Figure 1: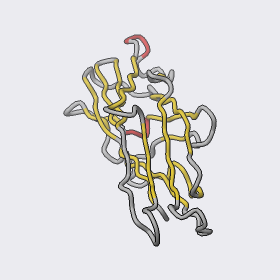
Figure 2 (figure 1 turned 180 degrees about the vertical axis):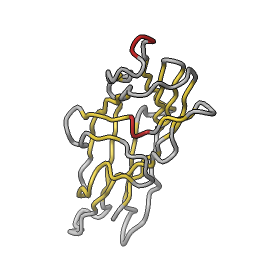
Figure 3 (figure 1 turned 90 degrees about the horizontal axis):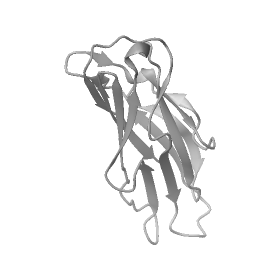
Figure 4 (figure 1 turned 120 degrees about the vertical axis):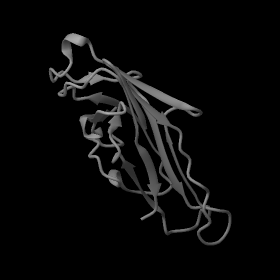
Length: 170
């Protein structure tokens, strides 16, 4: 996810990610995949902050309000009783920046539409667990809505940053 803030406008850019197909064992390759945002290109989430409300603690919901997240892992062999599990992590360690001033990603939280991915908040680390171990042959699909806390008084400017999502097999 990349984010951008202009004066009183905050943008989050969420890119598409798809893991490589990996070969674990016999038969056709197993598959592990993740998609965050649009099927192609970059999804931009914008947080417009009215000048009168900057820093007043009123959370600012991003637009679009629903960002698709899909994660799956599957064994190629249908008879394989060893189901794969997967974990989704996020790297939000590099804060949003306008060149001189920064806003930590810890100021951004999300809620999920159906709870498949738990609601949470970025913590500014390199390996924050977003979704705990989930069994294979199961696709997690959810829609997240991101909000900016709006508790800071940042100087006017365009703030950008990015969060990298990773799906892995523990």
